[in-house]
Image (cartoon, rainbow, N blue to C red):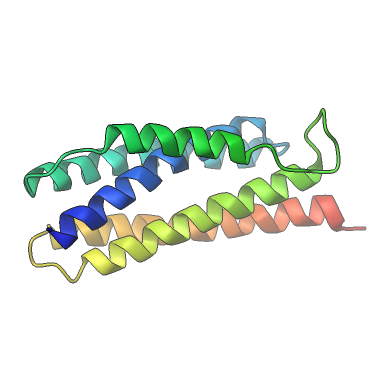
Length: 153
């Protein structure tokens, strides 16, 4: 088994779920947050294309069926209590932004791990890592604002 190709395929699956997760950004209360999350979602789509290219360069393929299951799993994950069964609440934004942050943190860890492989394009991986770190900073700031809105005085 090619461990690098397998690792990339795992991140492809996660990317599919992450793109679905970030699609929820259009429902955030804060207009600025909607714009940032929408931009990050577009970046995630581009990043997934880069991952597909890496997987194919290693002679492997995109795990489309598993990615579909991951998307469905993300949708099922939306069925979480937020204090109101019928509407979004300020808590929904807090929890959604936490999930988005965690998804990007996992992606960043993946880019860092992949930097150890001489088989991948190091400058491209570094670009993706830097982009992920910026995304984490932006999501942290949005989460702070959402928490203040939900729990502040």
